Figure: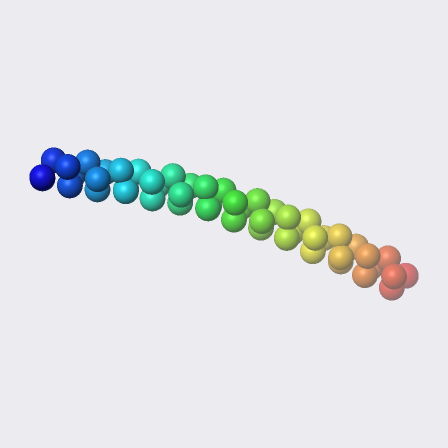
Length: 50
């Protein structure tokens, strides 16, 4: 039972690490997209001012 439990725990830890990596990667992408959007909108604002 103990070995099964340990194996299960290890699988959970592995899954957690993988999910965490995927989420962090996605957050980084979203942040980059957000910055690009902000840059675009600020450029548009600057263009409409002049």
